[in-house]
Length: 322
Image (tube, rainbow, N blue to C red):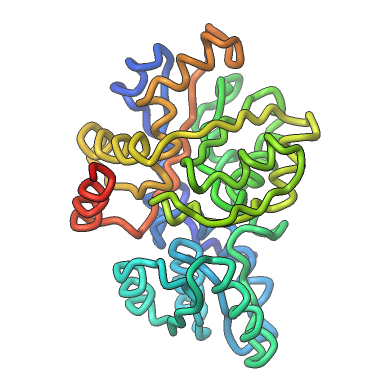
């Protein structure tokens, strides 16, 4: 029996968010995972399968995937090398060191760091841990929905599930989880920030699109191309996937409101999903007929994130107000 590295996280009802949308809002608190985000679900599963025949793991990540890989490697007693782009915060680098990982800085964006991680896989014989594009990751992340189903109890079902999209790993996991639960009629609301919107760009174009650059401050949503499986879910019709954008300002405002009302600090990448409630987007989708007027309970995946502290929050406020 494989051990789990992730926790069963709480599903909490938010009274203030429920008031805003006029239907119960439940928060799946993935910020409570040992590595600070949902990533540990899939990465824990993947590392267990990979590391038996390797000298260690290498992961390319601007933050949360790397922290998950570093945490799991430490628990398994194998070395971890995390390759981060230069855009990663010192806060994340420090947290990676605290987990005992070796940190290498390569390039400006995740795609550059990933090329270096793939090189180290070849030269140093390390097991490569992709941050979002692997079926075992999605299988691990699908456990979120299994837990939601268990928490809501028999007969209950969400009206929609809200997720932030970076590379699309969480989206693929949620989609798989909904299929496993027999909830294929539950729409997924996929949120990105303007400037880190590779999924929305692909949905609009009807094909995979590579962004020129990541201009959003939600650096942890910063993949320039979404994984193919996430794009396929948006096209196949097996599930309803609604792709929407919020601004950096809306995501940051959501982070601040969430801190005030729920006493939890999450990063801007997570704020994108929260902003769907706080910015009035849910109401707009109801008005447009894209979500039902009588909406069942909303489940917001609070994906968490470790690249935030009060200093970083203040910095983001000044930067975005300018």
